[in-house]
Image (cartoon, rainbow, N blue to C red; front, side):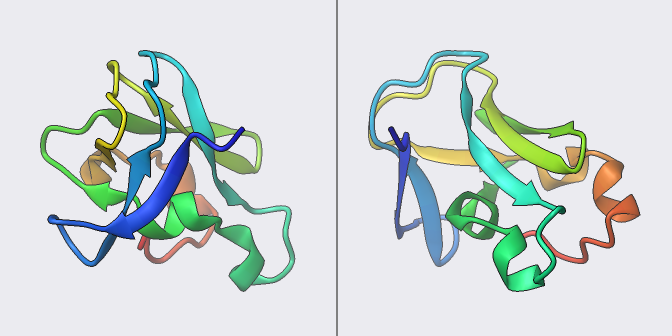
Length: 101
């Protein structure tokens, strides 16, 4: 079951919002799959629309050639899922990822 939906964000453009209560430490979904040949197919909606926050409720975690978004605290239903871009894994630069929309 998909745990998030994309809709208009008060932070910037579109954002990713929880569809249900998400527990701390729970994997929200795949954000980047560098195994995909086409750059257009590497990013799912979670990767395109996760907005930056200085007080994030999630973190991006590398696992091999993939990156996942994991909740750092409980996220209530209809709450925007955010990450601190300054704390993105160094693996992003090694993967030639130039921007995280």
